[in-house]
Image (cartoon, rainbow, N blue to C red; front, side, top):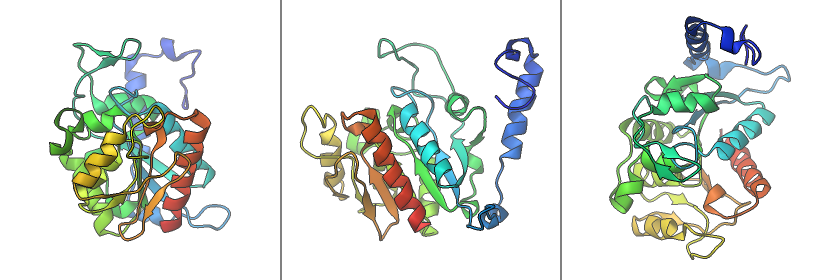
Length: 268
């Protein structure tokens, strides 16, 4: 858990301690532009990477396996990571046992803190100058909380903060990696970009192929790629991969995300 609180004694800690600890994590993790000058003990330049989350849980937030895989691959590459999420209400909360939405209300930032182990920052505070790259994992939270793709389809819009960040990285010519459904964010923020969300022919392995077709209809150049592959849009420094848009074994998705991270960092 970090700090004085452990799994064995966390229940005995007063609420004030837990709140203070969480705030301390956020304050300590706040980045400035100077962070990009950090160098690892190996002498290699440390890459600072921002990761945007959309909640916690595949049906109403970030796909947890994708987020975890992203963090493992970034850690292995020696990158310094800070996670962000918008401080907004979730579209709805889904019972992940039944796949049905309930009446409960939750906050995207607070739910994202579950994945980030408390170390998550309001997206409004993300300073593009402080980072070398941006990663956005998938999950239905992208289509529900970072955009309204889930309800509007091709007539969707994306969260103002998310759009500002994506355009900021693009204008700064800094690389971005998006997987699963999250390339739809790039499709809206960077018209005409090249992306992949897998294949454009629907079958048991590719149940979400219609997304690829819609992206093409919007003017994007969709490239069919297998789960272990990525597409690199060199002009826009955008790397995309299908992840769970494909019905594939989890290790293949993990490996595909590793390729995405590798290609993003090569561009950073």
